[in-house]
Length: 462
Ligand SMILES: *Cc1c(COP(=O)(O)O)cnc(C)c1O
Image (cartoon, rainbow, N blue to C red; front, side, top):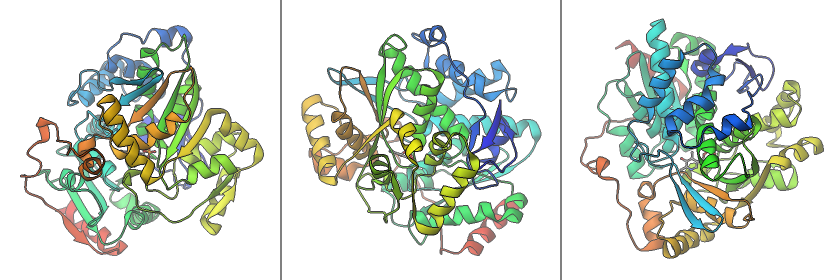
């Protein structure tokens, strides 16, 4: 299996190199040259398998010769061993045709563990073989960083540096990043906001001398291996509700478009998904783009669902690549226009292509709060604010086709917002109850590329 860039001007890579690289050198994102289809019989055969066996069957065709079958199966088993639920991704019923897919039973209580725990294992296996070492650098608004640190802590051949905006992540998120004691974990509190952190990371990747010197590797949501790991739970949920014999729909709380793009890949592989509904909070660029055709940035408004407070959805570029007939030059052109003028108009043909697969909706802060309150009262299920955005948008798209809304984080990760809406403070699962007693370790840095680069050089030499 070969991987190509959405901008058509980066080297073609195999799975392992794609995973270790992250961002393509032409600024684009890697995608498989062809999406391998699954037959109806193969999809039906997933029913009743363990999550791990389903994961093996769904992902195997994408990885080529990177890992042997037995090794790959072992790595998957290890990745999900630390999850706090035997189903890994259990379904709960909210209403007659509305289901919640709980993706928050991993070690850091957000869906990002599904991908990050697996790529931690895959990186370790690949680097163990080659003897190479890499420096992982990532920016986070909270969940990506904690999931990455949890996945890479203590692994040989890897240092992980996470940049988060000082004072702007929740206390649970911060402690998940600052309490691991392993020497290869480096939490960096940056004076600035999430965009500041992201810009610093981008600049490091675009500094090719630095990138090669420290062997920079990226694990943010544009890493193809992360998208791939997320394809699995669309299949596990779909077959649990009768696919491939009846179709299902999904609603996905969306920021960077990574999670919902995994659903698009599942659909392209043959899972009968009627609609993929994009659910945004008040940062609604994706909803506006799909409704009006204008992809126009408009300043981030902080919300109670902070992991979706995003202006530019990096992974949307992957969907655009298909929508523009896999024309890398056309994608490079609209991305240049976005960079220069803050927006672009999606062509009519591309918009029709996108609307065939995707619907969308957005949720005000008030509706998010009201949804948390009402769902707790009606069903007993406590939603985190991100999941509440999903449930609210899903309710406007219900039909006779079962709707599956992704619950992306555990309510205890956002206790203030949840308590304000339900009157009850959600508690952490017992396995992490001592989070508030563990000592913290963090380095505070200014918004200066040179300072961050100097610290990274210093730490990996020492
Ligand atoms: C990251 C995150 C999202 C958004 O996911 P994308 O893949 O960026 O669309 C939604 N909810 C939670 C809790 C998250 O951590």
